[in-house]
Length: 297
Image 1 (tube, rainbow, N blue to C red):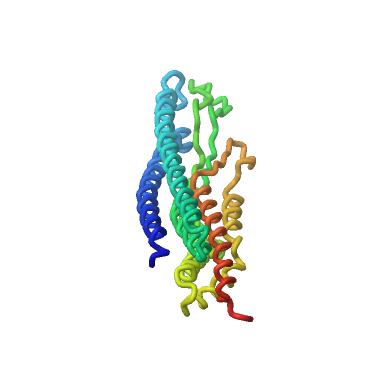
Image 2 (tube, rainbow, N blue to C red):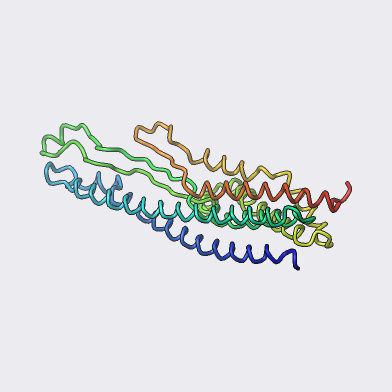
């Protein structure tokens, strides 16, 4: 138990920090999304283009709406920037934790075991945020929509709606993407992403945890076999991220309106999870090789 003492204390501190900052980050990102949705609702194409007052010269509410839009966007940016700062702080805490574990145990015979456990903890710290935080933001809009029609002039209406008009907006995390695909009838893709981005990584990390905590136990041998089988799909989580971006990215598409796709902080949380998971696998292999836990054949 003595060899676990420092790691146990450090893990407790990391766990508390992770829960605290995960709550803060999640709350701020939720507020960011709400503000963005308020902007889209305010400038919704159907509402704006269908409102006769938007077409009346000198009487339309465009200026007031643009002021409200700027105010909402400023608040959204503040929420998002604050969430990013909290994410950076959490990242620094995790890195300090990993560095401390490395230097404390580097000269010990069980160094790979302890540092491997530290990387598993680091990966788990970012798993929830990587799956629940917004991954990608998509929008389609036009500025100053113009309609050329003689009837507009005949009845004294303007031929344009001033300011921005939104036709489409989405903001999704990996979990929301899976739900969207499933409810949309894309069952195979939804199940594929579910297994590769949630089930496989969790099983692999939990199996790694069992091996690193008690390498010589009978449960470790079964866990080694599990890790070896899942290890064949070790880059699947990266592949899932690529699918996600390719599936939703349409910034270069030409629909006759402005389109844009922006990667959000959820992507970086997911990448952090992947990187720490890969490093934990490196130390895990060393422990397995050292203790000869792999079953022949």
